Image (cartoon, rainbow, N blue to C red; front, side, top):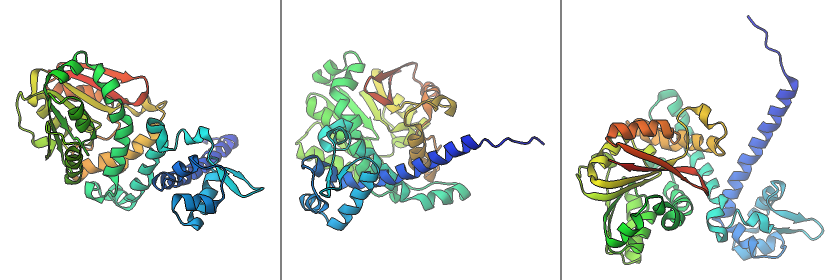
Length: 356
């Protein structure tokens, strides 16, 4: 039996880190509220103001706004002047928590924390009994994912993602058949349908709510070259039909990703291309130690992506399935050519350019 030496300095350092984690978790919740209530957007437009003035400008209850401001001030997000009881949001902070900054708005992602926290009891139950938490238990997940997708995928689609595949933009302009598997609320495929009227687009998703949202947007935009269908990707039975098939952050969520990938292989024309956007990660956790958002992504995996798959009797692949497992599964699905690319501004995703 060996005696382990207790390192007091190491213990004190870890205790300090735990305090930081507790405070940061609390700030994440308050940041989500600040985003959803548009308090950050309101403050960015105001000069230094009292809690009453901020509440009035935002159309909110002053007492709640004042307590929220307390968290923001002590969290070093909002500045406070005690001489006249005024609060202000520095421009340098507003650049990362307001809607005006578009793709740099990191407050969007804090919404995942309360959404995931809402199923904590069910997740703990799964730790003891196995199984998973079904998709229906998650409130607002589609809305948050749509906002996430708008920043990470839709905003980069035309100018950055499509050019990763030489000749694709020209082909879309001329007219090809496109399928988006796991299209969610349809933001990406609707944008493509609007930009390329000569091409035909189809979107499949398991969620009736998501498909309804996608169809409503297509109707508002008066798109005649896109159609949507509620469909489990594991039941796709099409052959040699599409010139381009895309999945945007969708394969790792599937109950049967191996079957879905094989179905995509069959549905793709021999000279077609499959664009798979998925999370940038290594399959072994040791390869993710320096990943800037690895703890966040493993948490999303445990509390959503993995467990939803398991709830339907699936593989429970998980968000961080990684490049090595992705390449193995693509090969088993029948694909012979795979190239992995990244975008300079996007450290979250890998872009797999896949051909039969």
